[in-house]
Amino acid sequence: MKKFDFVIVGGGCAGLSLAYELEINYRLKNKTLAIIESRKEYKRDKTWSFWKVFDHNFDDCVIKSWNNFSINTSENSHKLTNKKFPYQSVDSGKFYNKIKSKLSANSNISFYKNLKEINSENSIIFNSVFEKEIDKSKLWQHFQGIEIETPEKIFDEEIINLMDFNCDQRKEVHFFYTLPFSKNKALVETTWLSDLEDQSLMDYDRQLENYIKNNLGIKNYKINFTEKGAIPLFYPSLKNKNGKVINIGSAGGMTRLSTGYTFLNIQEHSKYIVKNIDKIDEIKKFNLGKKYKFLDKVFLKVLRKHPDKMPKIFFNMFKTSSNTIIKFLSNKSNIIEDINIISKMPKFIFFKALFN
Ligand SMILES: Cc1cc2nc3c(=O)[nH]c(=O)nc-3n(C[C@H](O)[C@H](O)[C@H](O)COP(=O)(O)OP(=O)(O)OC[C@H]3O[C@@H](n4cnc5c(N)ncnc54)[C@H](O)[C@@H]3O)c2cc1C
Image (tube, rainbow, N blue to C red):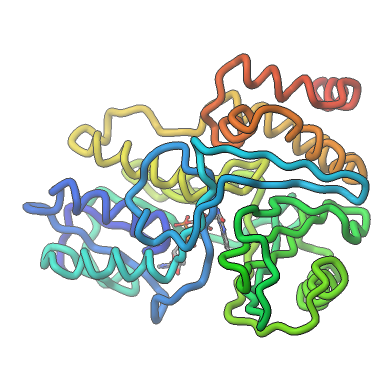
């Protein structure tokens, strides 16, 4: 069986981002890489959105960027503008095509369906696959989004609606998310923060239909694309067989637990790995920062205990400067900005969660 210097298990967002970063930094000129990916074909399956707080390799895969965003509850609406850090949406189909086409030019890179097809005994292994089913009783962000197209020009394409809590909460945390790609095309998503055991929350089609009709006032539209997902808002434990494995992507703890944002963290992790590839065994494990781990833990404790209070808590969190909230949610805030955000939280229930 063929031996490889590097093996990437899972050729999704993290696996391909890392392979691309290795390739563009000429790290695969004299080294071999096997990518183990089980999917039959690559096609658009996700829309990755985030605030661009630093440069990444995929500007040419961006569907659209925005400088304005809003959040609303049934009572209030708040709009923020930021010119420094645009909110971007990456088309996963374009992302896969770009990377596959770049990698195909290097004969040192091979794709396999199963790890058993190669000899990985002495390889450096990067893993982005969860080995077993993840606990459904814990907290998840689960959602379904549809890209709709309307005959008339009805969307304001300059502003996204990040969270619209003006909807049925069903004793959990529920909001809609709308990204207008143009005046007649938008991604509309229904998002829940809850466990995955309650199937009754998963009538996503009906939720989207009602929201589009009753909240957005759109009667006539066609659906171009559907995406569905569930992101664990906890770090599932992984038992790697040997110490040589470096976990990446969601499996590598790259998800910000209070938001589900992962894409840009994956890009930062890939850059970190490639920069340190020659001493990968010795370097400190990359993480999103202890402070965010701690703050998110307290925040999610409150969320589980008081789902009814969350629309107001999220809303108040955004009542700060756009720079502060964007940097906080993108793990780039300083201590002053952290204090500013923390000061927006209801003191009593957060203190209780902290000492519980
Ligand atoms: C629908 C959806 C929308 C999202 N939107 C956003 C967003 O807007 N912003 C954001 O920051 N984050 C978003 N996320 C979260 C996160 O960015 C994505 O989940 C991202 O794809 C995580 O990258 P990954 O490489 O860890 O996992 P994946 O991209 O899922 O890659 C894992 C790969 O492993 C393969 N695989 C699985 N099992 C095996 C096996 N046994 N052997 C070989 N291969 C295997 C899979 O086919 C897959 O290609 C979204 C997630 C989903 C599901």
